[in-house]
Length: 144
Image 1 (cartoon, helix red, strand yellow):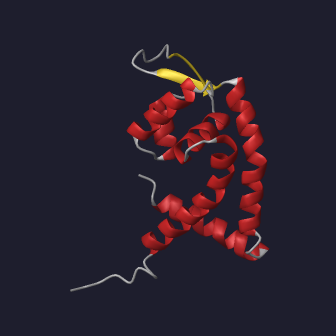
Image 2 (cartoon, one colour):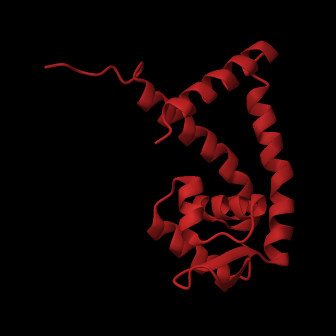
């Protein structure tokens, strides 16, 4: 029987790194704003590009539709999002951040960016460049 050494298996290692990074960053949006991981990703996505449908958010973030829909419902109820009819597709609506959502995003971002810098500070400038290059290559290889 062939076995996998998880300590050197790339998918496993990437998953572990992703989980640890996400947990570290989550402190900032969970503790200060009470957001879940999915809610944070919806908030960050809509801060980058407004007027997206839930399906577009799912495609952009690679998150599943049901958890995203639940997060959007909670965020609409909390007044973090605005919703309007989609003129080109009446089956969906377009979402954007409300003023309250924008304010929350602006409050969280400095801490999240600082956390990213703290993490990257463990790498030299050359290592950061290599990491960026490797990430780009992996992402390109995985485009569906």
